[in-house]
Amino acid sequence: MALLVGQAKVSRNASATLAFQKYRQETSQKDDEVDSRSNYVKIDIERVDSRFRAKLHLEVAKSFAVFGPARESRPEAINDGAEMGKAFVSDGAAGTRRVAAALSARKWSLKEIENADESLLEGFVISNRGSTSDAKKRLIPRGEGWVRHDDVTLVNPQSQVLFLQEGARAGSYMKQDPGTKKLTDVSEPHVPQEFKASIRGATASWIRKGAKMDRAVLLNDITKIARLALKFPLSFVDLPACAYAIFQGLRSAESAQWCAENFHKKLLPFLAEQIHTYETIQLKRLLERTLEALDAEILKSAHAFSGCSAILVLVLGERVVLAGVGHVRAVLLPEKGAPREILANASGTNCKVESHSS
Image (cartoon, rainbow, N blue to C red):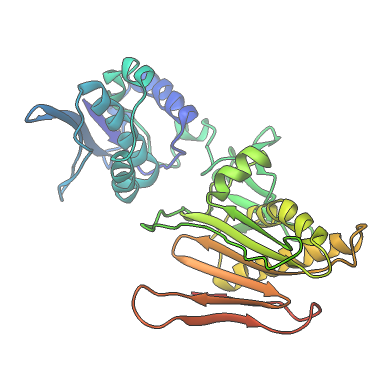
């Protein structure tokens, strides 16, 4: 079982797999035209003791191999091998290692095990960029959420980034400049990283008398919330991706209730406006924009004079960003050492938004 890989990169998804299979069939009779610089890759299923695992091996000057997790059955290892192969074609060695590590936590369904196809491991031929056959193919952009803009262009609706599939500029990402209204080149979308972190969110209230004035929001997976509630993917953010908020009503709980219900509707569309790497200062500004948008909507509502304080927390990968307005305070409780205050605001409700990252 062999996989020939050149320099072209494509998206790792079902449509890419079908395209690879079709292209492999078209080039099966043209082996002599394959670029000599292609890398020779083998994907095998090994038996270790009484278990099975997939092995992806790259035969170049420097040996390279990635092992999948040990499985109870061969079909499970075959599915692992197919995923690792697609990851290598799309993201190279680093992507293969990342996928192999993630497969340790994946359990294949009975249907996926029954449909395991070992022929998928027999490989694909992808010619280098610039070849005649490659120019006729439509390239696939990185990530999800792309829709058709015109015959040769896709667009990401949230960020308004365009991707050219054909022509001399095929593979380019572009965006319209707000000032000149002209299209300018932008860099490739951010490749999300998954960091090893354990995050738990919880809230508690203590009420001496009267009604409960605070409202808390715990979004433990904003990528899932965006897909299910707002119907668009957040496929370019680092993981874990979480968001939390506490809104404390002043005269009544109406404003706090409204903010809690609409927090994700403001934050997530703002976050999706950029598919490139976020700088920390940009994440701070994003939370400030969220607070400003909530405030603007409240002032137009029937409970404009209710008022509330708010504190927002956004977790992306290894970064934690906070912003607050009103009477709020955030304290970091490290595993070792004394507690540390990282955000404090004792001003009135018209204070300037503050933010902190760590």
